[in-house]
Amino acid sequence: MKIGFVGAGNMAEAMMKGIISSGMARSEDVIASDMQPERRDFIAKTINVQVTGDNIEVVRSSDVVILAVKPHHVGPVLDELKPYLTSDHLLISIAAGVKISFMEQHLNWGVRVVRVMPNQPCLVGASASAFAMGKSARKEDKDTVQKIFESVGVAFCLDEKLLDAVTGLSGSGPAYIYMMIEAMADGGVLVGLPRDVAVALAAQTVLGSAKTVLETRRHPGELKDMVASPNGTTIMGIKALEDAGFRGAVIRAIEAGAKRSAELGGKD
Image (cartoon, rainbow, N blue to C red; front, side):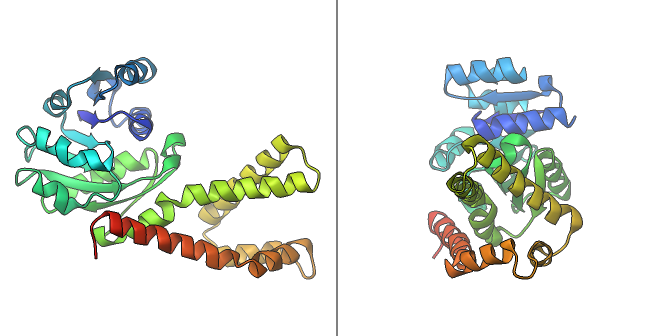
């Protein structure tokens, strides 16, 4: 499989590494374009893939084209590539908020389009992604996209109407977790811990808790109850969080992110 990237930013870099390390493609079967010569040089040296400043060369060289440009560049880039993208191509877009219908309007009929919402932990192979299929996409395209994004984390195929919710939850969610880690570390410093130790303990606590949810498949509420013993330290901390409206604030943050994603996508 020949895989091309139009845009070679951080997300594209992470995906290239995942695709190659998983064996989905060899480095010589991957090509990436970028407007910045220094970025092309970096990608060529660190990942050992072919690079170019020509988006059209990427399309001509690839079976799968991954569109990894900023959302406002999607229209102009697709207009440039329209004469060269055919039904033989699978086009995967990771541009946030850009709807499948918009992309299909800028392409010839038959181009197989899939829209994906990955998230930042893709950079460390721990992405939480969701994707939706375009009108011309095939069953084998679903399998291909699933494999690509599972090489850098987990991936779920959903109706496109749910991708705004995904954006609000897992797309924006890492920022909320970073804020929580920072706040937990600040709390640790407040009660006497060295800053580096506090940050490491907070980050590892989040990592371990997430791993426990995923691997035990127990409800988060059940696991929380297992930590909170009667009249103990944890239940007192939980009360402090509830007094501050912790869960309601998190729920409202997810809702706000999903609403903004819908607005950016041009929905009513």
